[in-house]
Amino acid sequence: MKTDIISFFTLQRRIFGVCPGCHDFFRLSDCKTFLKKKPLYDWKEKIDLESQRLDRREERLNQSEKEIRERAQKKGRRLAQLAVRRIDPIFTPRKLDPDDAKVILHPIDYVVFNGMNTATSIKNIVLLDREAKQPGHQKIQKSIERVIDQENYEWQTLRVRKDGKIEAE
Image 1 (cartoon, rainbow, N blue to C red):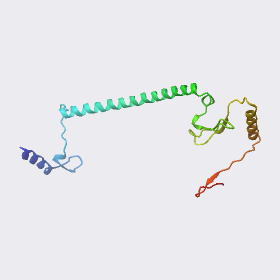
Image 2 (spheres, one colour):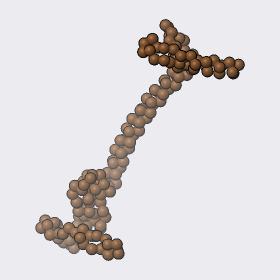
Image 3 (cartoon, helix red, strand yellow):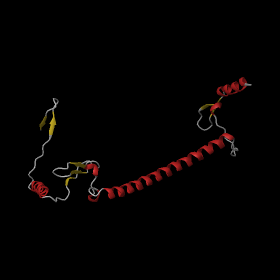
Image 4 (cartoon, rainbow, N blue to C red):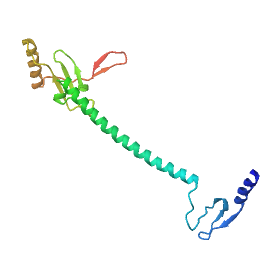
C-alpha cells in the first residue's frame, strides 16, 4: 500500500505538460486543479479558516489590551502626580521636576537644574531656599541675590587628571 502511494506521487513528478497560456513546461505534481464550482470545505480548510478567525480575534484583543494599558498608565501617572502634589509643597507647585534638584541645605536648600532629566538642555538654574526667619540667614540670601544681580560669579570647568589631581581648564 505504501509503495503504491509513493510510486503514484513519483510518477506525477515525471509527467510534464505545456501551459496553453504561457507555453512553459510544468510537472503534473506542481499543478493545482480548478473546478467550475467551488468544492466543499474539507476538514483542513475548516481548521485553517478557524485558525485565521482566531488570529484576527487575538489581534483585536491585543490591540484592545494595548489601548487599555495606555489609558491605565495615563490615569496612573495623573493619580501619581496628584499624590506627589499633596506631599511635595516645594517642587510640584513651581512645575519643577524633583529629579532635577540637588540638595545643598547650606547656604541654600536646593539648586534645581530645570530640564536636566527631561530635556536635551537645561532651561534655567533655580536656587530654592526656605523663607529666612533669622537675621543671619536673611543676610546670606541677600548676598547671594546681590552676587547674581551684579553677575559677580565665575564659571570654571574642572578636569580630573589620570593621577587623580583636579585642575581647572
